View (cartoon, rainbow, N blue to C red):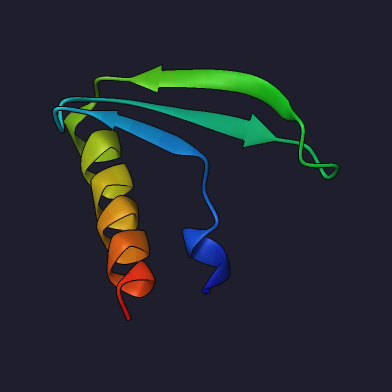
Length: 56
């Protein structure tokens, strides 16, 4: 899997998203909730890429 696809995210109706900033040990250090259209779109693309990779 491509490193850019190793993300921790949740999408709600493609208008809201949650992601986490992680430290080097993999622990969540910051929760980020976004309604920014560009950010949600970028996370949606990452989700779609992960989904596509899972179905190969």
